[in-house]
Length: 305
Image (cartoon, rainbow, N blue to C red; front, side, top):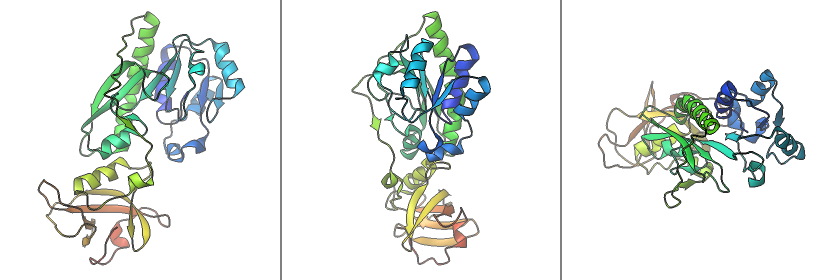
């Protein structure tokens, strides 16, 4: 059970050494940005001749009947966007396994990669866990960490995780088959649950330090919904930025320099050195594709807000 991006690596790993009896995936419109990831679970199922269902929530009687008839050992979930009912999981001999994009119990819930980059984490990882009646709450059966560098975006972290997903799924299924699985219970007092990201989470507060603003922009890299600001009453999306290499200070949100590289925007003060300047190199809006902001902004008396 899975969808584009994260769904396919887990499915491929399962198919390499085990029999996949059926696939359930989502229609393309369930998460529009996911379409930008080319790894189609549905197309893979068709290429392998595996019975594949397209469903929003897997509640259809035909899906349940098919899964029951398969008599599965495991229901494997990766980038499945809806809650799976416990009664459905009980159709499998050993229940369900889910791929999660964090080091549980940290960053349980939604958009864990985006939240981790936004919050300036230097380490994250992938967890494979049993599925319980709760979000990302089951026992850990596999986990591997990776570094988040200052140059990483949510997209590059996403791609770094892909081979880890394959390794963890292969190892976990092999261990289940051989009866050597080790399960680690999650401490409920250490679980950090994060919600879905909304437009308010994506809106830039220029009073924040330039590192914090840059982290938000990195967290919302293409194809994820971009960070948002406003300019002359219009909504503007900040696509790319870097820390300014010279020290600028002043009122947050002020555009203080226009150059061939882009524009310098002031952020809030921070405890570190380097000033308040952020060099914005690419912006877009609902009315135009990504451009260097120096093509639309001509004055250093203007503000982002």
